[in-house]
Image (cartoon, rainbow, N blue to C red; front, side, top):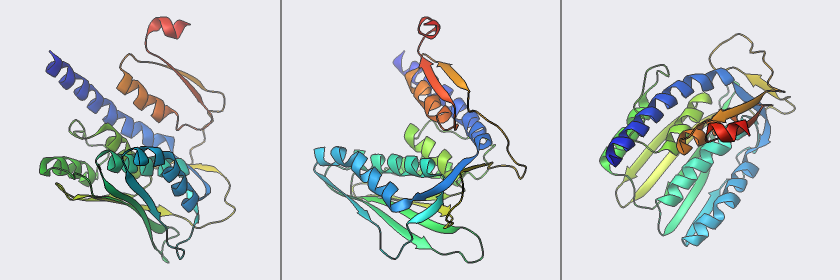
Length: 251
């Protein structure tokens, strides 16, 4: 019975994630200036207790030659780094987890490529785990149904966020030798840009206001509820409340 329930829940989550990926592309990006180094330092502070509790060194390598003031969706960048760093810390029992930043100037395009690498020397990934993850990373058609059932839920959300940013993710991993995740994100070095919402899948302007929108989410499955709370929380200006049953929703 437990195995059947597990398959049922994973199948449902898989369908929801494929649907949500399409919905997320309609939301657009919340673009504004931010300090990339400060954002990464914030991630280090947020996860430092988790690292120290396991005796792991959690380090940030941000060379002084790399620009710090950029323009982009800082919330998505933050979530990506948090998820990848948490994954590294979870799979490392001792040693070091390092967040490293590299930069490549693009003089032709208006955006520069920033690479954020998360390296650990933990247990690494088994061959089948790496194949399942790589198959989702390599899928370029966002409207083709993907099979997310065999990879971590947090990693699924991370892949969706990376796709929204028009970024990419490379993974290297060996059992017993650790893993290396390299996330490449295009960011602009533009100062004084006002906050704006840019649609990710259309050239037409997206004019929509959620300033007074209040959402009540009713879902008895905790995993699905948490996922949609995270998704709906990305819509600027709206508030989200959740309930696990009808009685709680009425109250």
